Image (cartoon, rainbow, N blue to C red):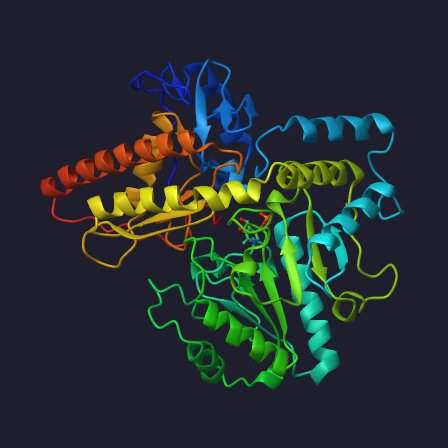
Amino acid sequence: MGKEFSITPRPVPRVETRYRRIVTPLPHPESVATLERLRRFEPLSMRGQPPLVWDRAENIFVFDKYGNRWLDWSGGVLVANAGHGATEVKQAILDQVHSGLIYNYVFPSEERAALVECLAGFAPEGLKKVFLLTTGAEAVECAIKLSRAHGLKAGGKRKIGIVGFQRGFHGRTLGAQQAGGIPGQKAWIINEDPAILNAPFPDGYWQTDTGFETFLKALERRGLTPADIAGVVMETYQGVGPDFAPAEYVRRLAGWCREHRVALVFDEVQAGFGRTGRFWAFEHYGVTPDLICCGKGISGSLPLSAVIGGAEIMDQFLPGSMTSTQSGNPVCCAAALASIRKIVNENLTANAARLEPVLREGLEKIQRRHPDVIGHATARGLVGGLQTVKSGRKEADADLAHDIVERCFHKGLLMFAPVGAWGQTVKIGPPLTIPGEALEEGLTVLSEAVDEAVAAMDKINSGRSSKTTRRVGSGVDA
Ligand SMILES: Cc1ncc(COP(=O)(O)O)c(C=O)c1O
């Protein structure tokens, strides 16, 4: 089981700065009734986040009802790229609601037409068909289906294999979890599809051999050849890091896919819409995929996802046979259009690129202070992470990551629960609207929290010999 944060109110030091305000015990005693109601009526799996009952969220801030204000480094879960509750997005939602159309199944609508045209406009040459869905996992499922159908046509019934990557995450549905590479999360499946496999992800930390041969060897080990493979599904950066593959690896992968008529799918659910300092994260590699999966920051608010690809792969299903009840809900489309316009008009992608050195250097500085327990520190654009390990070993330390996030929460810096295959990553994903000064303040807070958590851990460790806490499949997986 993943770790829970305590919901027993406890006094915390008062904080009052331009970006943070903590003036009550946490969680606030009056919010406990709501936390308990959620515990009573929701499954256990929903308990993982810091116990803050969100009252409202504005731009880079999250507020409770009791006068506390957090600097948000979660973006919800890397969703609020354009800032929480952006005026333009709220207005677009309200206008759409007042227009009289809030739902229309897949009957034609102007709103859907505007959004698919807009998304196609951002996609590379040749990828001009857009299918709207609701969740990121759904987009990945659809990409697996499209890849497999394409493989069948290209190579017959044996060409159905899907290659995902170790430690990868694509959502929590059947196909997405099998393509994903977190073994603890697949335990419930038992009869995993033998045609779905995971290759090592060349992150340079957990997987030190970053050569493309590791991919080919993974196929060989399963007795597969390119004639058996329909698609490769890769998070453009692996969320657990964030970790990018070496560009040379991806270029060879793209070439291999092209040569063998294998669909290359980039899961941009988390990476897209400016997060990494480029509109699409795959731009860092200089390659073009066959399919792009989008979600999260696409609307920055209401549920929406998309698959983008070329006609050859997108047009395989006949009219009426690839749809969904909420494909392109007009209110969600309106929100997405407004959010994308804001990202573009306010150059938020450029803001992410501009602040990357601040975030990266801040995280590296923390790592230099604690090299024994911060095993890996990475950042690209405005996504970053610290991976905690047992002192001097390359073994995840979920307890330390959890403690760091909890201490930040008490100090008015909000992050979601640690992520990753073993719950070891303290992940940073603020709205792309964050000013440099707020980012720097957050880094100071994070640094203090790490110092304190490491000191507390040292104290516990000196009191007892050892405590093994490598967790499998805990936390969210953003
Ligand atoms: C890379 C990636 N793909 C897919 C998903 C699944 O998205 P959703 O939770 O909307 O199904 C996530 C969610 O964290 C993700 O990070």
